[in-house]
Image 1: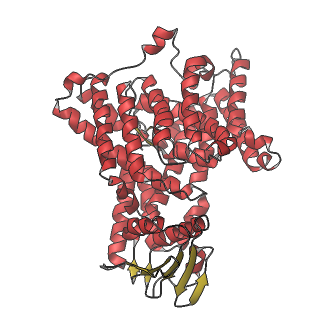
Image 2: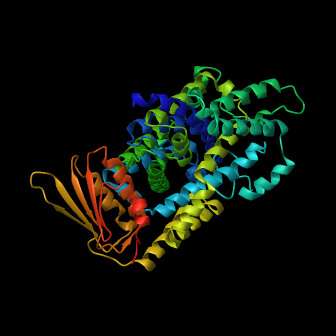
Image 3: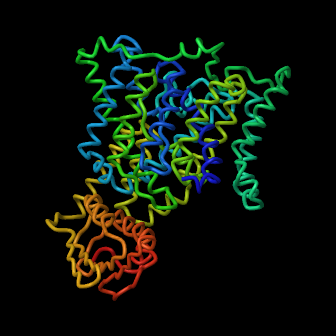
Length: 526
């Protein structure tokens, strides 16, 4: 972990600037104290980051839970009563982890996960456009089509024209230009531009711009268009921001209903995010899902005990971490400490950051998640991949995260049922050890994404220094999800000194560099 600090420290700074407005915005959208979002961000970074097995996942308050929290606070009669449900939800997640429920994450098809990433990217762009121009009516962090202000994603964009703030728009445009120049030109010129990240420069310039234009009638930016971190007057004032659960209502059945709802939704969002971040990870690390549920459960217990919102692993922060070069869990832990230190030492300085500057940072994050080339790539993979992908994207944009994923998953299952039939044995392993560890794997006639979990488990369990004979001569249908797993395995096999012999009807390939490229050269169905 210490070897990668040169990558993790710059990445943690970017994640910090992405997380700060999201923590505050999600708390506002949830009808909770603003400080509760910051508590969740700090616990998600330091506690969950320390326990989690994910090297690049970042946890914090989740926008997908905002509507549940808003209703639950009212239903349970206050925020302190709601905190009891957060603690209980965390305990339930710990039970999920012990019972190894994390395997559920393996049963979401690749097309739906990619649709989720793309949909989130589009939502980030659409939601940040108003903030970029200074129209800050809706809270940061919202991912639902319908906003708490009564507007929807597109009506908020149309209302920009009557609500442009010249100062916010100006520094937003400058910041976006800096980020594009930094990422596309300067980072390739000198190492100093890799150490000092573009978002940090944009934020510093944003603060300078605000200070210099305070008394300017044309470019001045009002407080309502800046970051709004609670500013304590002293130690007592700071400690007074923490809330504690009212365990006197623990016998109330409604508390347990909310707790199970939080546990289920938070666990599902986390598992989906784990699957998505593992796909984005250039180093092809595989996150242990059961350990992740235990980490999230621990985080929610602690967050609930000191007044924080529910926590999940969050794709926006995780993708920002990956895009900024984060290599180990140090980046998420450091970002948690940055949140903690900043709200104690420099809250007034943070409150000089224009929201339009942070919107520019998030616009870049959104674009990298939803690049237009991905749509062509998914289309080229065939309708079985493209249809669930598209349904997921559209569902997320026009409803919310969970509904969109649910729609994509339903379509994915229908596609599989239409195009495949069940096989009782999809994987056969035969140990031919006679002086050397040799394993033969033979895939059945049809292998679908339903088999992801078992195949991933078998490949991960292979010992070092193994000779693997991989036979696909009988395979007539091989799902793209399985091909991606094999491709990732081929990448990591070199580190474990595993030799691969791929046997197909076309012949034998020793240590294939890429399963994806190989299967492009032969039909996956006959």
